[in-house]
Length: 216
Image 1: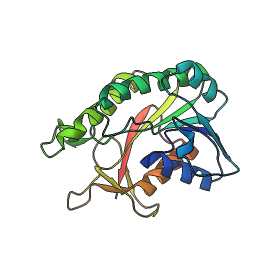
Image 2 (image 1 turned 45 degrees about the horizontal axis):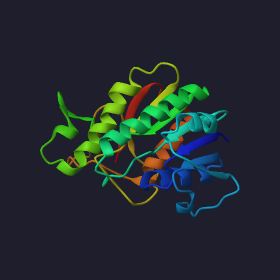
Image 3 (image 1 turned 30 degrees about the vertical axis):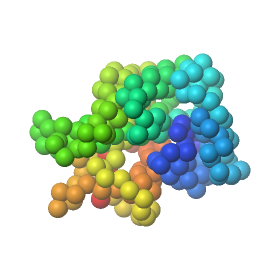
Image 4 (image 1 turned 90 degrees about the vertical axis):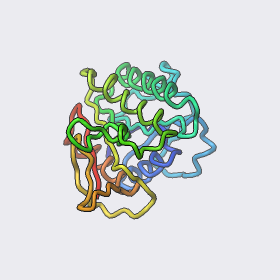
């Protein structure tokens, strides 16, 4: 059992990660903006309300944990998603460093994955324009905040191009910087299996200061 903190546990991906972590017996503290949105109760769950941009608060709450998993996202419909993503992750990464936490696992985006040599998914013409600010902000967190970071052991887990509610199969393929797609060129993963991969990494610690990805 690990003592972990999950940031953004009321969101689409964060809630799946929380369920998977509790299902495997980990002790979980969640930090959420609005605790009333989290209806789940569990003996191994502690809920703390707070703002991730309050770095001092966050540093105190992350202290003495074995790992931090962040699914923080200001919301895909938020017109300020680009700036708020960068502000939020600037604070989160600083707090992880201040708290002396060894492992930081982040829900990354698929946009910065390679679809061909010299071509990134977020630069493809069929990517919806309205999603680009959020996609590009996550890519910037990876390139500008995490890649230079050497003071703790981080992981940026990028999903497949399409992530959807589905089934927990535990069967998927892993990759590193290239989009994982099937023989038809489709790149898919259920949010349940994304959560499996995240908690697998929490437990097994196979990746270090790098990004990896997955798909069927």
